[in-house]
Length: 483
Image (cartoon, rainbow, N blue to C red; front, side):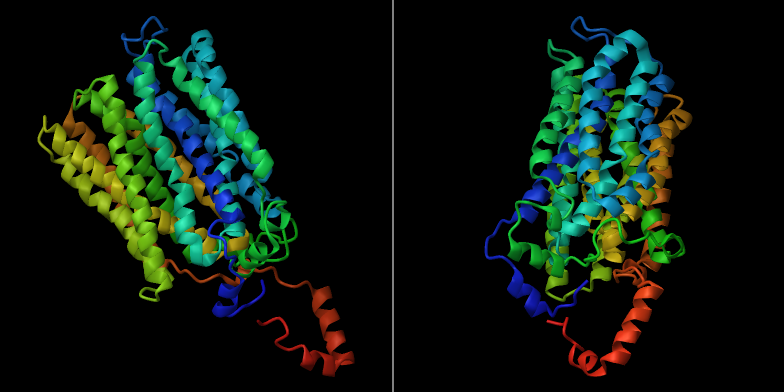
């Protein structure tokens, strides 16, 4: 990476308000939006699939345990390719991995309704596992592409924009799935719409998407230079930098990021996969209202995530807070805020629908701060290995995503019992609190020394010989690569 003074980097910034990096951010935003919509589709869809009010479409007599098995099956496949995908994306770029992820997801969604009729819940689980395997390629690739395309000074804003697509996808799916399921088209239309959206995105991505500015046909030379000078990524390029596994796995800041990711996944996915069921069995909300009320907390998360990203970027760029302090503050908002709100929800008297929805909205809304917390720590620590690190933490975190619906099946004996659901919320509270505490103690925002590859012995020997032969030239070139 070439070192530049801040004023020199600012001078390189293109005059146009929107550049190719913004187009890439928008495409990645659409990827997270559509991919999360396909994940969430089953959360509402399964309620319709097991409901008598299906407008002539097949109804499945699945027990609570079977339903939780279906809901968790996505994550069985999701963990398989996380680490390999991160490694491959880190070395060769994420463009085609993202294309494969979204394309396969689209096809599986189109097949799922037929598979459900022909093969019952086992076939549905098979489809969800394949979908999980394919989407396991997405986030490690996204993280690597963001690390290559997004300058440090814009990382909080554009990074949040990309990942907040997950909340928009959740909102759209929770709103539309209930409406589609309750219409004459029935629950199959939920999966058909999701599949078409995935394939549509894939066509646009193959035309405009690229792993890095260096491989883009559409970017201007000035914008490319501005990004490369201000992204913290190596000019070495993909495929040439070995992964320093020993340094990564013995790094406390990396472990702080990993544990924060695990705590986030358990708490978030417990709510995401089980919220529709909680609304139905505890709050007695019908399928149509279910999708609308279930979406409200994610509307709050989506809106607040942009406020948090703007505030974080403002505080850091104005030198009011150090970057690491910003990461700690917003990650604490994202973890400890929901923990406190969940404690309040646990002791809420039964029948108080309005207050329950308000608390759930606060719980999920505050969680939007994690986009400028641990989610960007991978890139802070090592832009060159961000995709590999993201694959590792997302893979381990996915195990806790699997445990989320399964823990509900294990803990909740009576689906209408508020006290049983309280135990589920207590588990999430404990994970939120303890994992963020570790994050506060050990995280840093400094680029780690293992981010850059060490020069080989051959290169070092060559440099020494060159200096011995041309000492005058060496002295004249000192500082040559400093702007």
